[in-house]
Image (cartoon, rainbow, N blue to C red; front, side):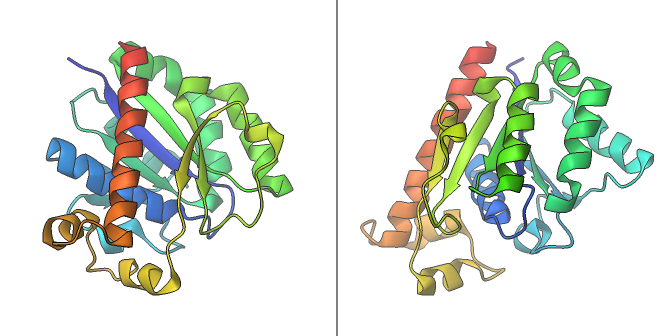
Length: 222
């Protein structure tokens, strides 16, 4: 059976564009594969569950039972891609837990490929967290996300060696449009008759970029 990817969308800071990326990623996987399973660990922030309730479950890592429940679901090589929208307040605890239980080794043994999508910023907290992650996560599986909605300056050199995913900025009126709970990226692609619109092109660019990341990671695993 081909490897099953588990995408961990994360940042140690709030308002990092993390849930937006988790939405785009989940809809891309749903379009490509016909199924996806997302876990929302961000209930103290704008929630993935609000946007994609059909494919999203709530999860917690605040106690041992919650940790076991989550890890038992994402460690399965069942052909269903998983997306974890990890709240900033759970960032440190999640990766501490992952290291303690040997998540990466167990995932490799079972044919599961964790991919960390790190929403990068230039502040000290973000840089310190990324530096710790790159010591734990293999380079091909750690993706630096440059979200132009969030970044106000170029990223420091610390991030230069990793693979990057850039999320371009949208005008404010389009940002408001996609923040409606009823909005669907794939639905927009299917309904919009003019493929030259800015939002249409933005969605397509992100879908293509995510497809390339998936192909590269899974090919390296194979």
